Image 1 (cartoon, one colour):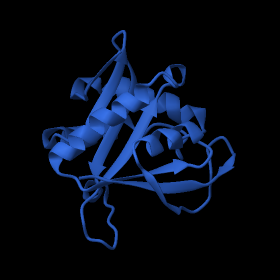
Image 2: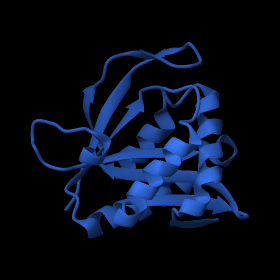
Image 3: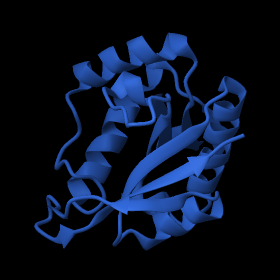
Image 4: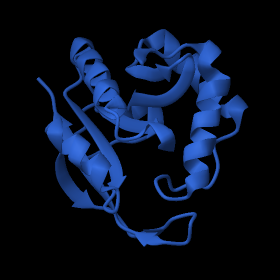
Length: 167
């Protein structure tokens, strides 16, 4: 298993990863991956900025990814007026529970520190206990509950915001 920076040549494999995790209907609020051209355009915009974007490969297969985008890049802001990172992570079902998330997180957060980010935020479903435990191991803390939602599977859930202060 290897962790490395995301490259534009990874776009098809990254799209497949998003499609697989979205199709589970349990962890993402969307039932399908964004269109590949939309993902490609986002990557072409993001890659020159050297953002924390990493993938996990097992036997040359992309099986996990983590992305931390500046909030302004995502059109988000809060009352603090300070820039912060917004984290997203996906791991294929067959590769969960093997430490990939921990390794992806470590690489991304170390990169955030080098970039001088002050904080990272994420939204996670309360039902996703393994993800919450991972985030808590990296010192992410609950900030607030977000509005309840219904997942693509039809199951109701409660997202929560978590935050990590860096530096």
